[in-house]
Length: 270
Image (cartoon, rainbow, N blue to C red; front, side, top):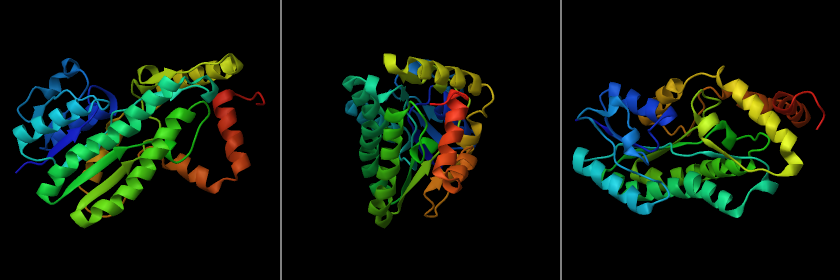
């Protein structure tokens, strides 16, 4: 019997690459997205469905889970991938911007888990895979809102694994480093404030220049698949992010801050 994965945010980037990878390995794929009309040709097979799922809408989550069960009968792995980055200085973030960032990256993730858990309880097993970021372990300038959500996902996941272990349901965290997708150009929103205009411009230039040199999302997809098939208690997987996490761990704080400042802002003293 084929296994089934439900993935959020599969219209592009990591979500799309992950759906393709699971499909190539014989899994049934529930490739959910806010606008199924954006689904690629790879979804046109009997082993894939594309339910509409907006993580900020509990109703669409419930319907997508129901459609997945009606079609495939089970959900062996849930991949919480949907999300975006609110960039810019915290001083310029509007309350509604911060609320939307948490609604998408944290509350929506939690709601999706809550809707899938009864299915996994009935099955007697399952794996929940939350796509966080190295930005859930360390922080870069002008991303305080985004980092806050990813640190929240890390804490939620680490606690949740204790709750679910007795039910044979595993929790995994994926912590990608920089990935070449449309995330930098189209997966980010910006908050602005005149006091930080020059810094915002430098970070935008740095991000735009960086994207072309980054690896594609396929490596992350392979890691997600490996986590879905790993029945050990391992919690964290960091594709393309190990070097940054190691430097953050071993370098003195003053040196780390100096490197990050030069990398993102240039040589000008901040």
